[in-house]
Image (cartoon, rainbow, N blue to C red; front, side):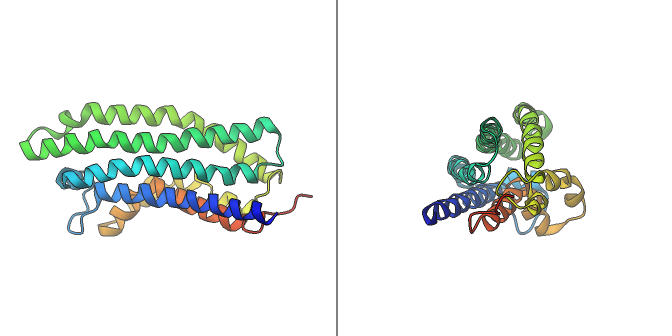
Length: 220
């Protein structure tokens, strides 16, 4: 039992680490202490920052995939088809995080070229941006299925999670992203909005690790 708790906690920490790794990659793209325009910052970052940010996509995806083991542990009491579906959905989304971040390399590179050569930014970055948007559209239905399975099973007390974990599930912060970013400015805007999607997974995996620290709640 203690061994299971150890691995449950360890896998959760990997999930948190995945979030911070890709968040660091986001900041390598976006952060500039003197400018809060994300697009301008991308065009001004060094080649080294772009390259290192690309590498974070690989390690971040690996860490996220390990973190899924904790969620699988929490869903052990559910039916196999539900448990495996949640595993597949979380896995697909975790891989997509890495792939989409890697696709941002094309956006960063074309933006940098447009800035250096005084090219039309919208025309230069169009293809890379549309490809990135297409990748996101593929992921959204998977996220919808995950939300349905995760929320219903936790609410029905079929998992080892307490119900309060739903407050930290990515759905609510994902829907509030535009509202939150519209009311932020300056450096805090770069940090929060630039790394938003990874920050919400840091919050989720932290809450998940706390909820399962002693093995999770006992089922009735």
